[in-house]
Amino acid sequence: MTQQFVIATYVIETSQPLQHTAEVLAGEQSTGTFVRVARESDDLRARFAAQVDSIEEIPLTGASPLPGAIGDPAQRRRALIKVRFPLDNFGPSLPNLLAAVAGNLYEIKELAAIKLVDLDLPQAFADRYPGPKFGLAGTRQLMGRDSGVLIGTIVKPSIGLSPEELAEVVDELATAGVDFIKDDELQGNGPHAPLEARVRAVMPVLEKHADRTGKKPMFAFNITDDIDRLRANHDLVVEAGGTGVMACVNLIGLSGLAYLNAHTQVPIHTHRTMLGATIRSDQIGMGYRAWQKLARLSGADHLHTNGISNKFYESDDEVLASIADVREPLLGLTPTIPVLSSGQWAGLAHATYRAVGSSDLLVLAGGGIHGHPDGPAAGVASMRDAWASAERGEDAATALAASSALQRATEQFGPVRD
Image (cartoon, rainbow, N blue to C red):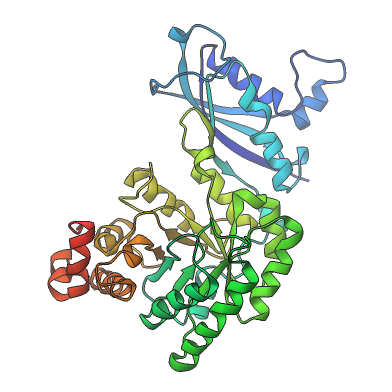
């Protein structure tokens, strides 16, 4: 039987020789320890030891070394390294994979920086983790939106609305023709507006609009909770006629998401909250490209990427790379929808469409819809007008001349980007 491997790509910095440091990493994460032991035979190492595949030196960033890093800082070098891990070491198990490719290596003192930036995974992982059940096509079908960008929003204020007030907001948004609404990640199952009460208040509103128009906007109720509550929370939504749920993957874990995916009957809107603790630093953590592969395998039908001109730290280039990563085929899985959020509004439609080159996106505007000078309905109209114009190949100036809702949006959010 041919041996299979996972190839992990890292960016490292070290004051030690690059080859030596890479080998320390490979050894620590497979058969080795700080000293060669008697039963670490050549035959055992040949089968189970991780191997350094390549080392490519790259420029330093000037960032500070990790605490406890050894060596002369003046001798620091930076490199892109690839390490090959035998699949036999952990099998197609995401938790055990992470123990190997993202475990104790973050504590190795020879490393002044260590970031996992990519993973090449064998088909065995897709055989065990089938990925999204719905993805792009299934979501479009449930929304009744066969083509064009999917326009959505987040409930605002993020937290504090009573279930009755939430129902009023949903009614306004559904009347305006929004495709998708979601709870904010801060709105879980607290005593002020518990999940059951929100479902009971919102679903009759959505059913009313479905009866009137033939389309039911998808509401992704935040069902994030302890793992033993996920199925019950999901079932509560589905039994009431809901067509979507939201889970915060970093809070329930990849195994929690995979557990939910095995049971779910509706798309999982997968929120990335807390991801900044993992991806933000150049010196440590995991890059978005590697992380999104694990989230998609675990069942993310929709996956947050942030959007251009966002309110957080990521540059446009970083965001566009994340969108491209999510759109890239992965082991034959059903395509996951990139979710653009964080400071999005209608004036970013043309620039986004030109950069991405596709409408297979779910674009969420929270403040960009709720903060429109003429209210949320006008906010939805501004988004719809701008994106339709971009999809027709028009420039932003043409859209601005034709849409009073977009014109009014610029009074609040500034000039459009073309």
